[in-house]
Each structure stands twice: as structure tokens, then as C-alpha cells.
Image (cartoon, rainbow, N blue to C red; front, side, top):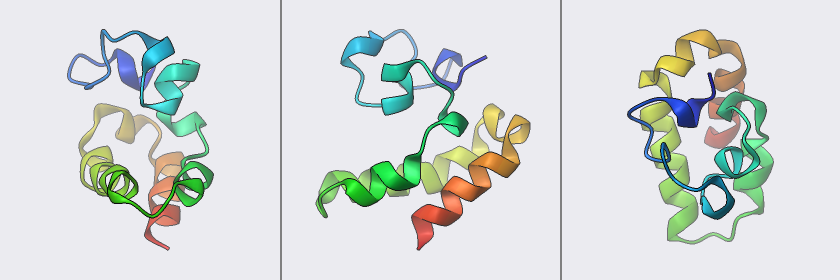
Length: 81
């Protein structure tokens, strides 16, 4: 199961071609995407901070987190630096 296929994912049911979420757009699991490079390449604007805050607050509470904790922790740690 991919993260965007979870019932409570905000991207569930949206067209992946138009998605703002890169893994959803590419039809990857969130743990498979290079979030740290994506985040570091973003301009220092409100959207960048929103992505970071959303991930740091929500990822540890997601059902996918328990299945891919090691990979997701690497991402979350990379976003904190």
C-alpha cells in the first residue's frame, strides 16, 4: 500500500498527475521519495515551512510510519537540519 492510498491521506482520491505531493504525482510511497533534496531545493517561503511542519507533525502519526519507520526517520531527521 502506498501512503496516498490510505483513507485519511489528503491526497487520496485526487488525480496524481496534478498532485502537489511529489510521491503521489510519481505514484511512489512517501518513504521512497527524496524529501530532503526536495525540501532543500524549495525557495525559503511559506510553502517550504508548511511542508516541513506538516511532515514533522503528521508523519509519525501515520499508519505507514510504523511499517517504514527507519526510512521515514531518516527523512524527518534530514528536514530538521
